[in-house]
Length: 270
Image (cartoon, rainbow, N blue to C red; front, top):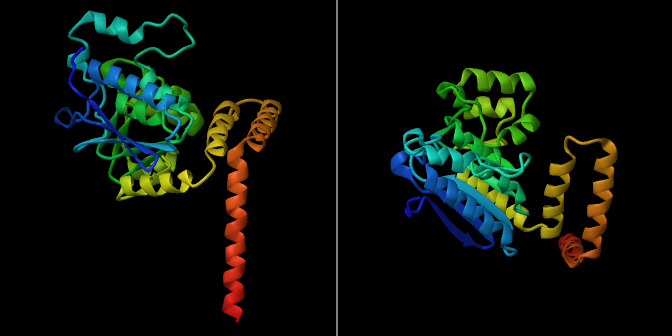
């Protein structure tokens, strides 16, 4: 594994910015990037000061996919990527997609340029995806005689219809941001996706961190489960929030905000 930095992390005003930083290779994923994404996610999971994570790509593309030539130059790399002790858990190839959901804050993926194959698998791991209108997205693994096996399927089945997912994966079709929005693959289209992501992050950061974390966990666990389990989790997380200090702080601040509005309206009448 090379020691070259593939990922950068900065934290400003409780918002973590993760950047794929291999622009000379269009942020294609080699073994070093697999390890670095895995490590960055572990760092963010433990960080209790951040409120939102924004993931973007440096250069022309978000991520052009797997660096096939680099990864496949050694047979041992396939073993490292695919090995797992427990079949139901993510391996090294899957964690750059699935483990963003282990971070107890929202993760916003900012997509521009190419977002192909493994790049789209990474993006699917986020809670929100914001793309430029002319971004290029594709489940491209079938072009290489492979299936999408980087964990993105765990999110894809919640975002699009089964027939849409099959067609995208079987044809390796390339679609733009507008089409991706229409299909449900992304959340927003914006000519300035990083600005849009920052605005969304700032709004979320103003909410109670307990509420945001519990909402993410509640929806992730309940979205495809039975109504009974959804109701159970709603009650459980709500009780935890009510007993915590952040909900009281949020209520106190909101009451003062409402009072300030009333006072302002009253002064205007005078």
